[in-house]
Image (cartoon, rainbow, N blue to C red):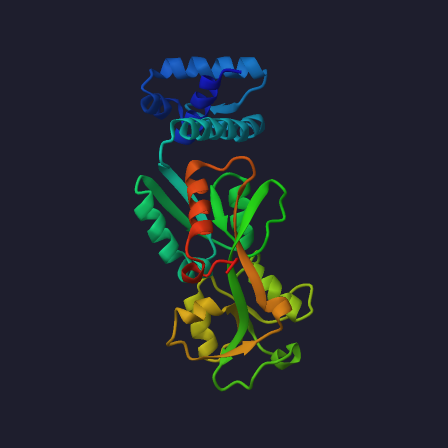
Length: 294
Protein backbone atom coordinates (compact mmCIF):
# COMPACT_ATOMS: atom_id res chain seq x y z
CA UNK A 1 0.00 0.00 0.00
CA UNK A 2 1.57 3.27 -1.20
CA UNK A 3 1.82 6.04 1.41
CA UNK A 4 1.24 8.70 -1.26
CA UNK A 5 -1.99 6.94 -2.25
CA UNK A 6 -3.15 7.17 1.37
CA UNK A 7 -2.44 10.91 1.34
CA UNK A 8 -4.46 11.28 -1.85
CA UNK A 9 -7.26 9.15 -0.39
CA UNK A 10 -7.42 11.36 2.71
CA UNK A 11 -7.41 14.53 0.58
CA UNK A 12 -10.41 13.24 -1.40
CA UNK A 13 -12.27 12.56 1.84
CA UNK A 14 -11.30 15.89 3.42
CA UNK A 15 -12.16 17.95 0.34
CA UNK A 16 -15.34 16.06 -0.47
CA UNK A 17 -14.45 14.96 -3.96
CA UNK A 18 -11.94 14.41 -6.75
CA UNK A 19 -11.90 17.91 -8.22
CA UNK A 20 -11.27 19.79 -4.97
CA UNK A 21 -8.68 17.21 -3.91
CA UNK A 22 -6.90 17.69 -7.24
CA UNK A 23 -6.85 21.46 -6.72
CA UNK A 24 -5.45 21.06 -3.20
CA UNK A 25 -2.74 18.63 -4.33
CA UNK A 26 -1.99 20.53 -7.57
CA UNK A 27 -2.79 17.52 -9.73
CA UNK A 28 -5.24 16.87 -12.55
CA UNK A 29 -8.50 15.13 -11.57
CA UNK A 30 -7.80 12.15 -13.84
CA UNK A 31 -4.60 11.45 -11.92
CA UNK A 32 -6.48 11.50 -8.60
CA UNK A 33 -9.14 9.16 -10.00
CA UNK A 34 -6.47 6.73 -11.23
CA UNK A 35 -4.66 6.69 -7.87
CA UNK A 36 -7.89 6.03 -5.98
CA UNK A 37 -8.71 3.12 -8.31
CA UNK A 38 -5.19 1.76 -7.84
CA UNK A 39 -5.60 1.94 -4.08
CA UNK A 40 -8.95 0.12 -4.27
CA UNK A 41 -7.33 -2.51 -6.48
CA UNK A 42 -4.51 -2.93 -3.96
CA UNK A 43 -6.82 -3.49 -0.99
CA UNK A 44 -9.32 -5.44 -3.10
CA UNK A 45 -12.36 -3.62 -1.70
CA UNK A 46 -14.28 -0.51 -2.89
CA UNK A 47 -13.47 2.45 -0.66
CA UNK A 48 -16.25 4.70 -1.98
CA UNK A 49 -19.86 4.38 -3.03
CA UNK A 50 -20.20 6.30 -6.29
CA UNK A 51 -23.41 8.29 -6.85
CA UNK A 52 -23.10 10.11 -10.18
CA UNK A 53 -20.45 12.75 -9.50
CA UNK A 54 -20.43 12.27 -5.73
CA UNK A 55 -18.33 9.93 -3.61
CA UNK A 56 -19.43 8.50 -0.28
CA UNK A 57 -17.12 6.50 1.96
CA UNK A 58 -17.89 2.81 2.17
CA UNK A 59 -17.56 1.01 5.53
CA UNK A 60 -14.15 -0.21 4.38
CA UNK A 61 -13.25 3.35 3.42
CA UNK A 62 -14.22 4.54 6.90
CA UNK A 63 -11.94 1.90 8.40
CA UNK A 64 -9.03 2.77 6.12
CA UNK A 65 -9.46 6.48 6.83
CA UNK A 66 -8.66 5.92 10.51
CA UNK A 67 -5.43 4.13 9.64
CA UNK A 68 -4.52 6.72 7.00
CA UNK A 69 -4.96 9.55 9.49
CA UNK A 70 -2.78 7.75 12.03
CA UNK A 71 -0.01 7.06 9.51
CA UNK A 72 -0.05 10.60 8.13
CA UNK A 73 -0.08 12.04 11.64
CA UNK A 74 2.83 9.86 12.71
CA UNK A 75 4.74 10.89 9.59
CA UNK A 76 4.26 14.57 10.43
CA UNK A 77 5.22 13.94 14.06
CA UNK A 78 8.40 12.13 13.02
CA UNK A 79 9.34 14.88 10.56
CA UNK A 80 8.85 17.58 13.17
CA UNK A 81 10.77 15.62 15.79
CA UNK A 82 13.72 15.06 13.46
CA UNK A 83 13.88 18.59 12.08
CA UNK A 84 13.30 20.23 15.44
CA UNK A 85 10.65 22.52 14.03
CA UNK A 86 8.26 24.27 16.36
CA UNK A 87 4.61 23.18 16.43
CA UNK A 88 2.43 24.57 13.66
CA UNK A 89 -0.80 23.84 11.89
CA UNK A 90 -4.21 23.31 13.49
CA UNK A 91 -4.72 22.09 17.06
CA UNK A 92 -8.29 20.81 17.49
CA UNK A 93 -8.84 21.07 21.21
CA UNK A 94 -11.93 20.15 23.18
CA UNK A 95 -12.95 21.22 26.68
CA UNK A 96 -15.86 21.29 29.07
CA UNK A 97 -17.62 24.64 29.15
CA UNK A 98 -16.71 25.00 32.83
CA UNK A 99 -13.01 24.40 32.13
CA UNK A 100 -13.09 26.75 29.15
CA UNK A 101 -14.50 29.60 31.23
CA UNK A 102 -12.58 29.16 34.46
CA UNK A 103 -9.28 27.44 33.67
CA UNK A 104 -8.20 27.87 30.06
CA UNK A 105 -7.95 31.62 29.32
CA UNK A 106 -4.48 32.08 30.86
CA UNK A 107 -3.23 28.72 29.63
CA UNK A 108 -4.35 29.21 26.02
CA UNK A 109 -3.05 32.79 25.99
CA UNK A 110 0.36 31.52 27.11
CA UNK A 111 0.26 28.75 24.51
CA UNK A 112 -0.60 31.22 21.74
CA UNK A 113 2.24 33.55 22.73
CA UNK A 114 4.71 30.68 22.70
CA UNK A 115 3.43 28.94 19.55
CA UNK A 116 1.89 31.61 17.28
CA UNK A 117 2.03 29.30 14.24
CA UNK A 118 -0.49 26.93 15.81
CA UNK A 119 -4.10 27.70 14.93
CA UNK A 120 -6.29 26.78 17.89
CA UNK A 121 -9.79 25.45 17.23
CA UNK A 122 -11.66 25.04 20.52
CA UNK A 123 -14.80 22.91 20.80
CA UNK A 124 -16.89 22.66 23.97
CA UNK A 125 -19.10 19.72 24.87
CA UNK A 126 -20.02 17.21 27.53
CA UNK A 127 -17.46 14.80 28.92
CA UNK A 128 -18.69 11.91 26.77
CA UNK A 129 -18.87 13.99 23.59
CA UNK A 130 -15.27 15.08 24.06
CA UNK A 131 -14.03 11.55 24.77
CA UNK A 132 -15.78 10.35 21.60
CA UNK A 133 -14.29 13.25 19.64
CA UNK A 134 -10.72 12.41 20.66
CA UNK A 135 -11.28 8.68 20.13
CA UNK A 136 -12.65 9.30 16.61
CA UNK A 137 -9.84 11.78 15.81
CA UNK A 138 -12.22 14.71 15.41
CA UNK A 139 -10.25 16.29 18.25
CA UNK A 140 -6.51 16.10 18.89
CA UNK A 141 -6.90 16.42 22.66
CA UNK A 142 -9.46 17.49 25.24
CA UNK A 143 -9.85 18.61 28.83
CA UNK A 144 -12.52 16.34 30.32
CA UNK A 145 -13.95 15.71 33.80
CA UNK A 146 -12.72 12.23 34.68
CA UNK A 147 -10.07 9.70 33.58
CA UNK A 148 -11.09 8.29 30.19
CA UNK A 149 -12.73 4.86 30.13
CA UNK A 150 -11.02 4.00 26.83
CA UNK A 151 -7.62 2.31 26.96
CA UNK A 152 -6.53 3.91 23.69
CA UNK A 153 -6.52 7.35 25.37
CA UNK A 154 -3.66 8.63 27.50
CA UNK A 155 -4.24 11.33 30.10
CA UNK A 156 -2.49 13.81 32.34
CA UNK A 157 -4.19 15.05 35.55
CA UNK A 158 -4.38 18.83 35.38
CA UNK A 159 -6.91 20.89 37.37
CA UNK A 160 -8.36 20.19 40.80
CA UNK A 161 -12.07 20.98 41.01
CA UNK A 162 -14.53 21.17 43.91
CA UNK A 163 -18.15 20.57 43.00
CA UNK A 164 -21.00 22.02 45.02
CA UNK A 165 -24.78 22.20 45.00
CA UNK A 166 -26.17 25.67 44.33
CA UNK A 167 -29.67 26.83 45.27
CA UNK A 168 -31.52 30.11 45.50
CA UNK A 169 -30.56 32.38 48.40
CA UNK A 170 -33.89 31.87 50.13
CA UNK A 171 -33.63 28.07 50.06
CA UNK A 172 -32.63 26.41 53.35
CA UNK A 173 -29.10 24.96 53.46
CA UNK A 174 -28.70 21.65 51.65
CA UNK A 175 -26.65 19.04 53.53
CA UNK A 176 -28.09 15.69 52.38
CA UNK A 177 -29.99 14.25 49.40
CA UNK A 178 -33.39 14.35 51.13
CA UNK A 179 -33.05 18.15 51.31
CA UNK A 180 -33.68 18.30 47.56
CA UNK A 181 -36.69 15.97 47.50
CA UNK A 182 -39.33 17.36 45.16
CA UNK A 183 -37.02 20.00 43.68
CA UNK A 184 -36.25 20.39 39.99
CA UNK A 185 -32.69 19.50 38.98
CA UNK A 186 -30.97 21.75 36.44
CA UNK A 187 -28.19 20.02 34.59
CA UNK A 188 -26.30 19.59 31.34
CA UNK A 189 -27.64 16.89 28.97
CA UNK A 190 -26.78 13.20 29.19
CA UNK A 191 -23.05 12.59 28.82
CA UNK A 192 -22.11 15.19 31.42
CA UNK A 193 -19.77 13.73 34.07
CA UNK A 194 -21.00 16.23 36.69
CA UNK A 195 -24.53 14.96 36.10
CA UNK A 196 -23.28 11.47 37.00
CA UNK A 197 -21.69 12.87 40.15
CA UNK A 198 -25.07 14.37 41.09
CA UNK A 199 -26.70 10.98 40.56
CA UNK A 200 -24.14 9.34 42.84
CA UNK A 201 -24.73 11.96 45.53
CA UNK A 202 -28.45 11.32 45.23
CA UNK A 203 -27.74 7.56 45.38
CA UNK A 204 -29.62 7.01 42.13
CA UNK A 205 -28.73 5.06 38.99
CA UNK A 206 -30.33 7.76 36.87
CA UNK A 207 -32.43 10.90 37.12
CA UNK A 208 -35.45 9.17 35.61
CA UNK A 209 -38.61 10.07 37.45
CA UNK A 210 -37.21 13.40 38.65
CA UNK A 211 -37.95 16.80 37.16
CA UNK A 212 -34.91 17.83 35.15
CA UNK A 213 -34.28 20.99 33.14
CA UNK A 214 -31.43 20.53 30.66
CA UNK A 215 -29.26 23.46 29.61
CA UNK A 216 -25.91 23.72 27.84
CA UNK A 217 -24.88 27.01 29.45
CA UNK A 218 -23.67 27.65 32.98
CA UNK A 219 -24.92 31.23 32.76
CA UNK A 220 -28.43 29.93 32.05
CA UNK A 221 -28.19 27.32 34.82
CA UNK A 222 -27.06 29.85 37.43
CA UNK A 223 -29.73 32.36 36.38
CA UNK A 224 -32.48 29.76 36.71
CA UNK A 225 -31.20 28.58 40.09
CA UNK A 226 -31.04 32.15 41.35
CA UNK A 227 -34.64 32.64 40.22
CA UNK A 228 -35.74 29.63 42.27
CA UNK A 229 -36.33 27.19 39.41
CA UNK A 230 -34.34 24.39 41.02
CA UNK A 231 -30.87 23.29 42.17
CA UNK A 232 -27.71 22.40 40.26
CA UNK A 233 -24.24 20.92 40.72
CA UNK A 234 -21.25 22.79 39.35
CA UNK A 235 -17.54 23.52 39.91
CA UNK A 236 -16.73 26.19 42.46
CA UNK A 237 -14.27 27.65 39.93
CA UNK A 238 -17.15 28.56 37.63
CA UNK A 239 -18.87 30.47 40.43
CA UNK A 240 -15.64 32.36 41.06
CA UNK A 241 -15.88 33.77 37.53
CA UNK A 242 -19.39 35.10 38.34
CA UNK A 243 -19.11 37.01 41.65
CA UNK A 244 -22.46 38.65 40.93
CA UNK A 245 -24.26 35.29 41.02
CA UNK A 246 -26.86 35.41 43.80
CA UNK A 247 -26.99 31.75 44.77
CA UNK A 248 -26.37 29.75 47.93
CA UNK A 249 -23.36 27.42 47.83
CA UNK A 250 -23.92 24.08 49.52
CA UNK A 251 -21.00 21.74 50.08
CA UNK A 252 -21.23 17.99 49.52
CA UNK A 253 -18.85 15.26 50.78
CA UNK A 254 -15.36 15.25 49.29
CA UNK A 255 -15.94 11.77 47.89
CA UNK A 256 -18.27 13.35 45.32
CA UNK A 257 -17.02 16.93 45.40
CA UNK A 258 -13.32 16.43 44.67
CA UNK A 259 -12.45 15.63 41.06
CA UNK A 260 -9.45 16.24 38.82
CA UNK A 261 -9.72 17.44 35.23
CA UNK A 262 -7.39 15.49 32.91
CA UNK A 263 -6.02 16.37 29.49
CA UNK A 264 -6.54 13.39 27.17
CA UNK A 265 -5.08 12.42 23.79
CA UNK A 266 -4.80 9.27 21.70
CA UNK A 267 -2.14 6.93 23.00
CA UNK A 268 0.87 6.79 20.70
CA UNK A 269 -0.42 9.57 18.45
CA UNK A 270 0.55 12.73 20.32
CA UNK A 271 1.20 15.51 17.82
CA UNK A 272 3.86 18.22 18.27
CA UNK A 273 1.14 20.74 19.16
CA UNK A 274 -0.45 18.44 21.76
CA UNK A 275 2.99 17.59 23.12
CA UNK A 276 3.73 21.31 23.46
CA UNK A 277 0.40 21.89 25.23
CA UNK A 278 1.00 18.97 27.58
CA UNK A 279 4.49 20.23 28.44
CA UNK A 280 3.21 23.75 29.00
CA UNK A 281 0.54 22.47 31.36
CA UNK A 282 3.08 20.36 33.23
CA UNK A 283 5.72 23.04 33.56
CA UNK A 284 3.58 26.13 34.17
CA UNK A 285 3.37 27.73 37.60
CA UNK A 286 1.25 25.37 39.67
CA UNK A 287 -0.27 28.08 41.84
CA UNK A 288 -1.15 30.37 38.97
CA UNK A 289 -2.77 27.69 36.85
CA UNK A 290 -4.11 25.63 39.78
CA UNK A 291 -2.66 22.41 38.41
CA UNK A 292 -3.62 19.08 39.95
CA UNK A 293 -0.15 18.52 41.34
CA UNK A 294 -0.28 21.75 43.34
